[in-house]
Structures are given as C-alpha cells and as structure tokens.
Length: 106
View 1 (cartoon, one colour):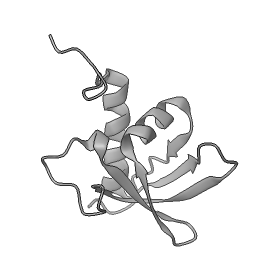
View 2: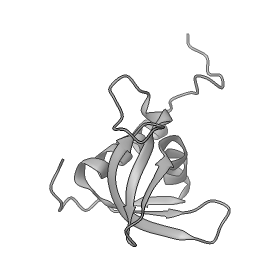
View 3: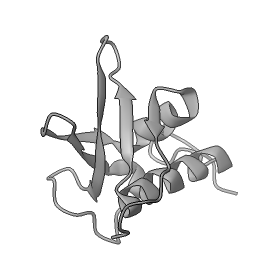
C-alpha cells in the first residue's frame, strides 16, 4: 500500500478528473478564467500548452502535477500557472474552463 506524504500526495478521483479537464483545455485551446489568489483580479485567456519549470514543453517523464499551464491572456500576455494549484481551484471554483469544443484540436 502506498501512503501519501509531502513528496507523494494522494491522487484522488476528483484530482484525476480536474487534471483531465486541464489537459483537454490545452488540447482544444479552451478559454479559461482564474480568480488570482489573494487579490481581486480575474484573468481570462486561452489554454495553450503544458510546460515545465523552465517553460519548455513538458516531457513524458514529468508528473503533470509539477508542471504549469501556459495561458495567453485576453490582453496578450503569456502567463504560467501551476497545474496542481489549478486542479484544486477547479474543484473549489477559483478556476474555470469553458468546455466549448469548437476549436481545432492540437
């Protein structure tokens, strides 16, 4: 039996579903909106890619929970947000993905 600790958190079904939604958002280049923590800001944009800490495309050997979502904001700025945080915020309501599958899949 694998026990969770700080280096290996539990991967719950709700976390898997949230991670899948984030991956699909990149695949379909869906619009996303985030309430930036500890501020009054709301940022909207388009999900573009999943990247590592250096901003390079995430390789197959990386745990997606340690990667970042690259978003082009509506104002044209590129931002990266931690996927583990977004998965939690998606479940709690601080991050939203419009699941319109009208774009061209990647």
